[in-house]
View 1: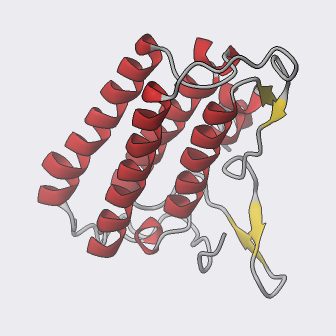
View 2: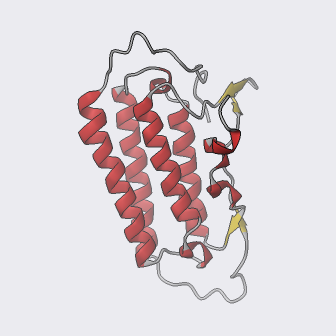
View 3: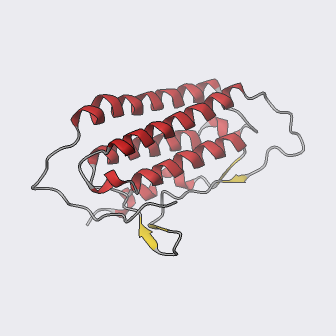
Length: 189
C-alpha cells in the first residue's frame, strides 16, 4: 500500500486557502481546472496520449499564458479600501471524486495509467504550487517580474515535453503491464 502522505492530493499547494491577488486566484483556479480535465481525460486510462487531449492541453497552456501576460501588463491598482483582502481559492484536483451533471460521482484517479499524462499533471501541479505560493499572491493584482519569469520557465518546460516527448513517443505498446490502474469514469467538470 502506498504512503498516503505522498499522494498528489497532499501537495503543499492545497494548504493555500486564500490569496489577496484576484488575478492569481483566477490563474491558480484555471490551472487546477485544467489539471482535473487531464486526470479525467480519455488518455488517462491508456498508454496513448490521444491527439484530442494533446490539442486540449495546448489550449490550456495558451489560456494560462494569455492571462499571465495580461497580469504582467495590468496596471497597479490603488485599492486602499479593499486590499488586502482574503479571496478564497477553490481546488478540485485534490478531491477523490467529482459529481457529474446527473449527480453521479466519478472517481478522480490521481496516478493515471498514462505515465506521460502523469508526468504532465505533476508539472501542472508544480506550476500551480509555484503560483499559489508566490509573492505575487499578496499583491492586490498583477504578477511580479520574478513570478512571471518562473511561470514562463515552467510553461516552456511543459510545452517542450508535449512536443519533444509526447508528440514523438506515444502510443506505447505495453501489453504486459497495462492496464495497471482503474479508470476515472467519463469526464465532466
